[in-house]
Amino acid sequence: MTMLMGEFNHTIDPKGRVIVPAKLREQLGDEFVITKGLDGCLFGYPMEEWKAFEEKLQTLPLTNKDARQFVRFFLAGATNGEIDKQGRVLIPQVLREFAGLDKDVVLTGAGSRIEIWNKAKWEEIVSRYDDNMDEVAENMSNMGFTI
View (tube, helix red, strand yellow):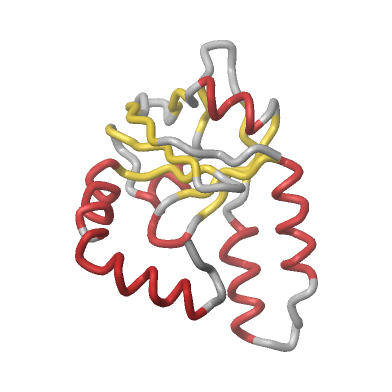
C-alpha cells in the first residue's frame, strides 16, 4: 500500500460533506472507514488497513479495562465512508461534533490513514512542532527509529 501523505484545506458543507482530494481518494479506495482519532481529529482508514487495525484490537484482553475503553473509543463511532460523484464523503454528526468540524477542515495523509482536522486545531498543533520536535525526534530514537 502507498503511504498516504499531503495536507489539503477544504470546507465542510452544512450537510456534513467534505471533498476528499483526488490524491487521497485514489489511495483510500471506494469504501473506507472513518472513526474518532487521537488528538481530537478523525482517522480515515483504507479498508485493508482498517481490517488489520481491527485484528489488532481483537487481540486486546477483554479483562483489561484500558483495553475495553480503547476498543470502544475506536469502534463505537466508526462508520463506512463512501465517496459521492462530486468526490465528497459524508461525516456523521457525532464524528463532526467530536472533532469540532464546522467549516474549515484540513485533511492530512498520515501513512496508513488520513486525518481530518478542524483547521484552527490543526494550525495550533502545527505551530507547536518547532517547540518540541527535537525532543520528539530523541524519543523516536529511543524507540529505535533513526533518520
